[in-house]
Length: 156
Image (cartoon, rainbow, N blue to C red; front, side, top):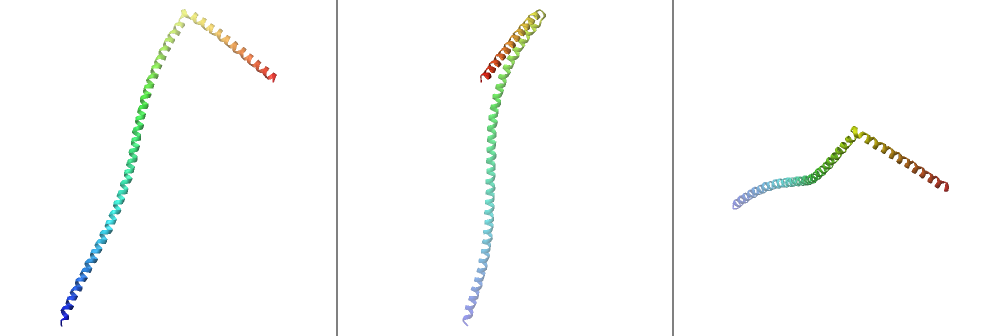
């Protein structure tokens, strides 16, 4: 009787409910898939971020070393400049010395000329005499020192 259409309606509703449940299940699975993908992506993003930070750190370190090197090069250039300056000063002194030596050599060669040789011989003899006197003085001084030492030992 009258319950047939009602039962029919109930069955239809049941079927619709089942379909809704199926849709919900499918949607939940899809959401779960998207969530796991999104977690994977955020992990990847974190990894890339970490890599980027490491690279930045490396870059900063290299940059610091580069700047230190530039500074050191500047210092060394300054040092080289000073050394060049000092070298030039030394070269000037050496030139002056060389000139003096040449003058002295000319004077010596004058002494070595035949007419001057007797003068040179006289100077050498004088020099030897003076050297002898110096040696004598040294010896007598040494003797005096040793004698005074001996006397100090005898007193003790």
